[in-house]
Image (tube, rainbow, N blue to C red; front, side, top):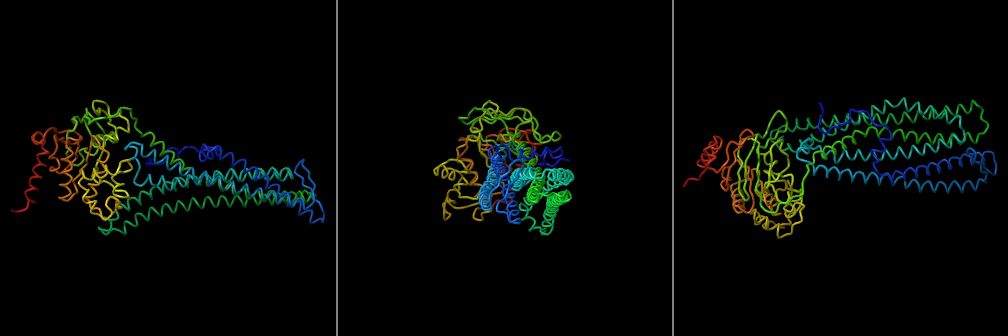
Length: 600
């Protein structure tokens, strides 16, 4: 069973090591080239300093005023004072190079993190509703936060592999120039150790994949825990609520423990084995009765220092492999969002359009059709009500009307043209929407009505007046500058709904679709919403999904959905005669009105 959001490529073979580096560093050729050049230069400086230290130490022990540096065919003799000056200068240059080698990875990491988050959000927001809904609760938040952070950590590990690998290569080359036999033996043994420890790296990759999945499950659990916290407290199940989330947290912790332990034991084991090899190499030199103690000291310093870089390189390589599943998951999400992006034409809507559904069918899964052969027409400026029992397909119909989903078959025509022929910009200007529960963002009332669109204060106030929320807003101490949010106590449910209606109206749409606009409102708020809709009638095309039949009083036609099909369509009188469901709904509404009417 494949879990949503999991990497499609996680079960396949992993690419070679150089592909890891390429995937994490991407097209950052300039930064990578600078890292290579800086690492080589830093390695050369470090090799020179170590060789100079060994030569100076040997000269001091033998009380000789000069020291000779031997690196293969290169032989240079100078005074101890001169070598000291050269060593200090070389070390100063090495320090400058280290500053650059510290800055470049940090710069690459910061840029990559910003780029990935921007690309993910761009891809998510332009994807279809179907592609977006494929994510579980909280999955996108997990992708854009923790998963991206882990990918950028992979960038740091990639640069560490490059830097430490090149530093090691230069030190080994210098050691080879001084003592070829011992160096070759240590290199061969080091490669053997690397091959022996490869299964540990593979195990680390599996732990990394499991940790990524566990973090996704925990993110879903946190999202669910927050959304259900109020009900959990009311029903007295906070203990079970905490235990459920705690189990997910414990699962992620176990995966983290396994991942961290594998990485650390692999790195430390490699370092210890390399040190054993260095000691063995020294033993070989001693057994061979090498007379040149100076060369002996140079080899010791170079190989000991090289063992540190080898350990760091292997540790970075191991962590890099553990972070590959995070990159797989982020890449898979970007591909999935991109594949779910619908195509649009270039046509524009300049006037209130007609809307036609011609034998439209839609299903989320092939086995369960949601809409079946739905056909109707909405004339320009007409107010149309859509009613039906729960599960009739009303919400899906709204998403099709808004262009958020595409019909499986049939046609959706806007002014006689397929709706996909209109440009995205023209479409979003023409169509607007008031959901059943509009969400407020943290910001001023004016910002909530604008909702990131370039509209002036006059348009904001005009929309608020149309939504009959202006008087409420100006009664607040800061008026339109009052800070509100989704959990703002100062905003009632009715005010939230009317602010949402103002948001839907502020850009002057041609078509306004409302999903249960009065289902959870008090009588005053319901009357104000109905008043707004009556005033808007004829100025734009209105489509109302409603259970409360009082909301349908302004409608020119009613469409009754039953089981995903149109049971009846026409005026209130016509659908009352044609639809048994509507007859029952009318009877219930009449009985409710009679029993709740105040006595006179």
